[in-house]
Image (cartoon, rainbow, N blue to C red):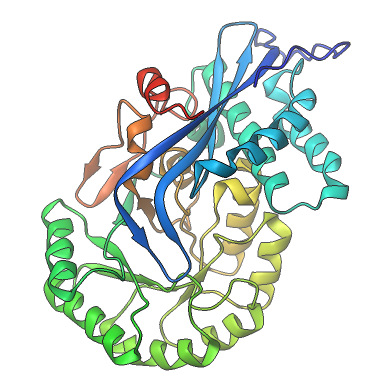
Length: 380
């Protein structure tokens, strides 16, 4: 998709900086095959479909972002939504990103401010922030002010329900050998006893000092989650993630009150109003905002500050490359998630030192796409 400049859009000049005008929005669908397809309680994932979004300017700068789905077959839906909002971006100065966001938010009122509308708003807003950083020769985190230059990271993308206990143990030990000091496993065998056995085996393999998180992928009933949560408490999980369907905030609040292990949720929650309900009901001890669902950089920061007033930690869901810039500026960010799904899109990946990811300090988001990889994985 390529869009021409919108007519009659006024120039907006920021004092002390040359005016930059957005001249077009371009998207590229890509399909990233997984070396090892996997299942969760509710997913069967064989490849990752991404819609790469490029916001271009009259000064040759390009802002980049992306959206993803568990199949490339449905990327057209996202592409159409991005195209429908691009006229609110083209012709504008990316420095006016907050005003651009508000115009997009107002435009989708009749379509609901959840689902693909927020995906598109997020992609365009994140790309604008990438442009603002590049135009000022600063990383996005420098624009807001850093509190750290590295963040603890947990290994994801393994320890699946389809693996045997010996396979789980071998992979967990492999993560430790690679330098990870935290990792996340999936829950979901048929019985509670089997699930507890699997968690116990991993905890025994990695020892007491490596953090272990567990994700049920919304696959349990409230009663099952209560029983399993109590059974897992001896193994000192850092969090019990999405144990029940994400819409059941009353159930999540009951779990949070009944268990010592923090309940983590948020990757399925849209914008700050959705998170205000989560926080207000005390439904989670850890919030996991997802950059494409929440609405972009500014919404993410608002939610993090909301959580900070309640002493609730946050950890970004996926989008490690972009979310690292947010981790750098938010004091209550406790972890970054390391998932290898999107690695093929990048020529350079974040460095891990002592169980932490080093946060890039290059202009913009600091992690441009690899042009050759984009061409190689381009989808029809």
